[in-house]
Length: 205
Image 1 (tube, rainbow, N blue to C red):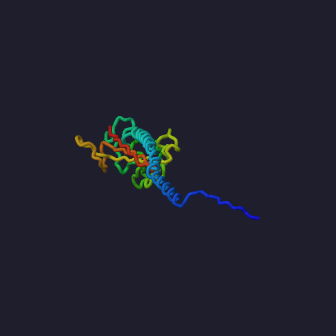
Image 2: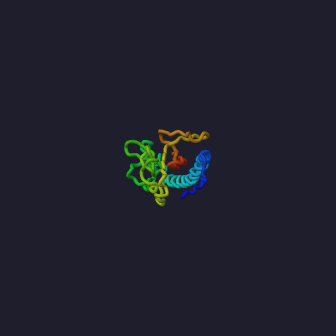
Image 3: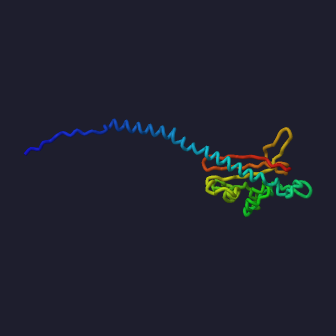
C-alpha cells in the first residue's frame, strides 16, 4: 500500500516583509507621539485658561469689595489715618487661620498671620499651596462654588502697600511703611497648566 503525498504550498510574511512592517509601524508611532498626542494634551489648556480667568475674576471681586484697611472707619465716614483711625502696619496684616473667609473685613485680611509672621493667603489644593499653608477649600472664598469644580486649582492672595508718584505711577516695589495704596494680587494656580495672575489696586479713599 502506497501513501500519496502532495506538496502543500505555505504562504506568509517573509523576514524582509516583517522587518519593513515593523519599521513602518515604528515610524508611524513616532509621528503620532511627536505631533498628534501633544496636541491632545494641549487641547485642555484653553479650558483651564477660561476656568482660571473666571475664578480669578470672581475672587478678585470678593477681595476688592472689602475695606482698604482693618483700621478704617466701618461707617466709611473717615479713612484710616484720619481722626482716631490708624492704618495697620504691614507686620499686622492678615488674620489667624481660625477666622472664616466670609468674615474678612479688609483686603489685607486674606493674608495669614498666626503670630509668627505674615504669610500669603492660599485656598485650594494643599500641594499647589505649598510652601504656603492651605486655609481650606476655594468654596470658602466663593460660597456659591462647588468644591469638585476646582479640585485641581488653588488661589494665592498677596497684599502689600505700594508707593505712588504723580507722573511716574506705581513703584512696583513693596513698601515697608503705610501708603495710600495697596496692591492686591490674586494668583490662580493649576496643577499642570501654569499660573494666572490678576492684579488690582485698592486705595485709601
